[in-house]
Image 1 (cartoon, rainbow, N blue to C red):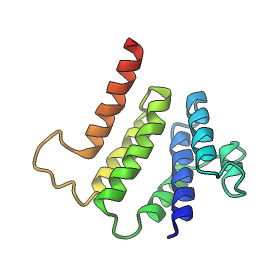
Image 2 (image 1 turned 120 degrees about the vertical axis):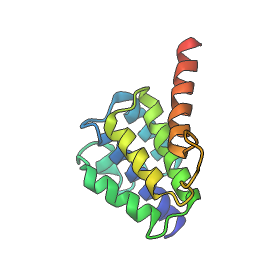
Image 3 (image 1 turned 45 degrees about the vertical axis):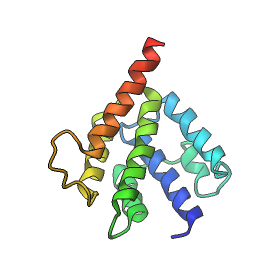
Image 4 (image 1 turned 90 degrees about the horizontal axis):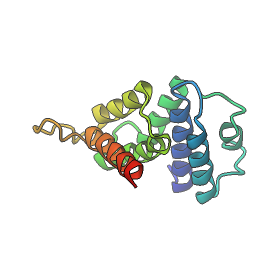
Length: 141
């Protein structure tokens, strides 16, 4: 998969994750538009209808993009990068919906490095902890 194709698929995943709770939150919308602009994809014909919410993304479609992005044999690095990208989106509105937490858990199950023998050391739990720590620190600022 080419790098540009990978970036486009990642953005589609983020848009799909924002839809997992049934609607895109205002903070998620701002975050998605910022990422699309940074990546130069805000005018892409495939991304534009998704970004402008002209098309609702169903969970199965989002999970299909995750599979496309990770491929048949996902690396731990790819799983970790995707977890971090999704955590950034989740952090944007300060709440973690159960469907959003589920996709993070599902990513952990795909990660070949998940055989950690230390409870509480999973990449997903670490990512969620980091999201909440950043959120708490912004509340205290």
